[in-house]
Image 1 (cartoon, rainbow, N blue to C red):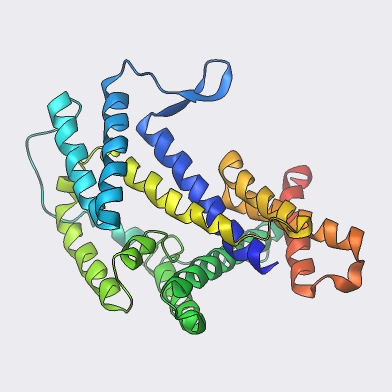
Image 2 (tube, helix red, strand yellow):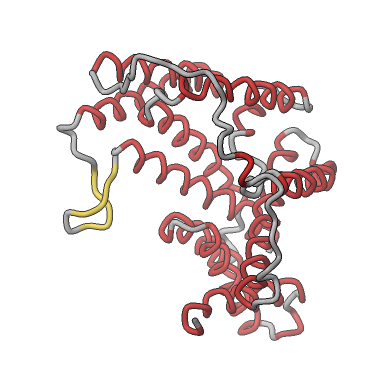
Length: 303
């Protein structure tokens, strides 16, 4: 089950990032009698996306993850050259804090007793827990500090609570950390530098807004490919674990939902264990999580 939780989820998230990047860049699109098909090669945005992706792959092979900044720069320059870069001609460097007061500390428990609220919070907590365990486990393993993973989870929990007070969506351990690890980041200095740059970026949001998605998408796609490499850690020769893991991997991008992919994987694993070994072989934690996911999937029938 550990591989289902960690590596299976990581691979599924990697495929999800690849799909998001391909779709955002217009390299793949829906419609036309098929769920997905190649984008319109006659559009300049799609042409820019394809060229940026191929250049991004070549730069990555030459320079590794340190090429990401050069990839974005190339994408911006190519967009300007192809006439697809949106430019207003003016900037306002003041931070966008006009609506911040409406979300800071604005916490309400008025609906906390409703079944829908309890199920939503339970499922969200479950997803955040599994996602962070998976990412932190893989990141600490990549730097040979897997024993320090619990400390990372504590820090993640505190940041999640703080983020709620600030009106932010739940914080997670980001997949982009893999880029820093690949170029030598091993301690906390890289995180502090990144945090400082985020603060500075608040003053430059209008400037960053001109960066086209065709310049960002290739980076997302390559990071997704890096995450997909964890498929080698999956016990694919053991069908009892392989079926649920593969289900998680394919259903996260196919349903466009991390929650749905994880839930279907848990349900499949529980069914297989109950069928082959009986309920005594099922972990109580897995059983409880499976019941929660079953309740989550059955909500549309009740409501």
